Image (cartoon, rainbow, N blue to C red; front, side):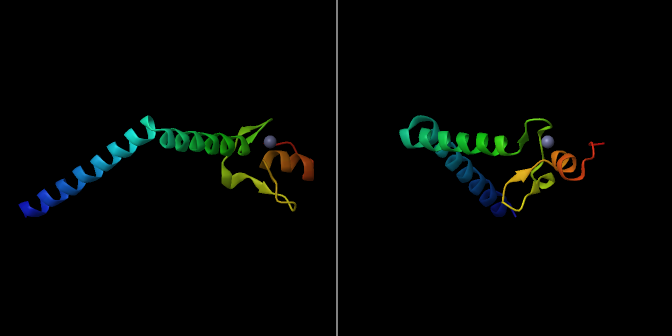
Length: 87
Ligand SMILES: [Zn+2]
């Protein structure tokens, strides 16, 4: 029983060490900084895609996909297509 606990702790320590090395790599090396900057760009682009200029940030599941492939906030779709004000 204690051998299993020791093995689990060893695995968790190993994973923690890998995470530490990865974070140090991401923060202190040029490729790591580039990866972080790419991730920042993707996160900002994703947030901008999900943000309606009128109604603000929307959940991805609540967006409406138009036939041309673009997305629209559900409230704007309701207003534009069905001429109803959001409740
Ligand atoms: Zn909207």
